[in-house]
Length: 517
Image (cartoon, rainbow, N blue to C red; front, side, top):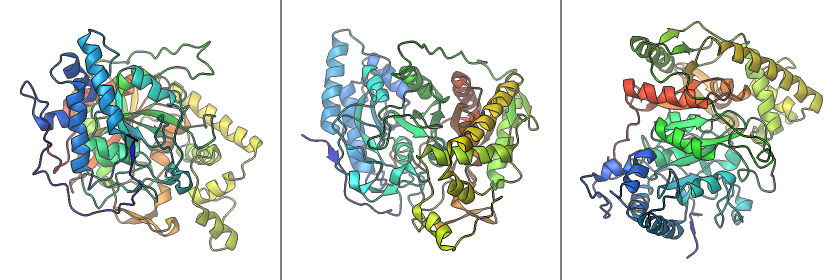
């Protein structure tokens, strides 16, 4: 049977999922409750399979039934490959019965962002003209994940060309946030985050150039890791016909625990095929295994960046929790960079990377005179418009500025282990599919453009730094607030470990109501 691709356009639907009907599969042999399996970490699922407390086939059937039941209101898993997933699960069980374990993800069912190539499945990036583009080969990370024993049930939704913090397109329709289906799950990995939060998959893998892992993690209350630039191969996560790795862009794991991020990163982190014949990647161990003595700089707000008071306050509150646990916490420590200039550098490099651009109507507005550009304007609109025609010399100047900031960050991390700061200015916002020039986001009482909110995600991205998104609890109106932990280049194990330690103090993933928890 061919894989199922959901090409029907689904619109946002109100309400929450009906939890009165549980899937018929009951893979809970040894007292494992259905909800416990649905929202378990991939790390725990792999251990259950290894101990033969549940089979890969039972678990894969279970998640498939959850997708068929609960995804009707979410529209997260938009490409479905159930038959091949079940066959892979059977083979995993047969292999384990013979005493052979494929790897650390043996038998774990997972999904992956639509932008990754999976042989035989469509890779469209939400572009209607590419709806019939079937991948001939697996992306490098898919190869690694399969080799470690994971089986793929399908692919999750994205915005058009991955260029939005919402997840909708004309091929697959709109993905909804499981905490409130009237709201966005974030983007561009919104389908990934929604599927994880609703307990439709064991693990996810996504990408990030402008917060596309971290923003959906924040909006949906899950974990995500943006790796140090260049440590995970990106081949097979490219626009049609492109094989080169763009500047800034990384691919990384998403999960329901920090342990899942560590597990998946260990599977995929490696030199790409151009470097593999001569390079070897050895990530340093975490700087700390306990919060006591951990050196934490918190960055709750920045004067020129609109950020809701509740989110800034949450950063401060997390700092206080860590201080009580014995960490050394400071809200004044900063790298010797100009935040505004760093942001400007990021926007220019982001635009020149070619993966993220303002929509054509922005440029049309400029050309028609409907919008004006001041030569000194540092807004995203101005920067991206200028960067659209960025010459190599100008790019080199921005790269030089970025490299100097990388050195300043390195000096900063000689004294501090991590930085904790916001990911986004607000919690998940309501779906807004108007032309992008018309979109307005309210940050407390300030009215802002949707495109004014790249600062927090750009801090780590422009300097090639790792950043781990973690859930910090709910807002006053019951929506997740995620924060990010930024560490030194190649300090990926440190940021993930700090997220694990924070979960011991705050609690970790919470399942949204209405999905059989």
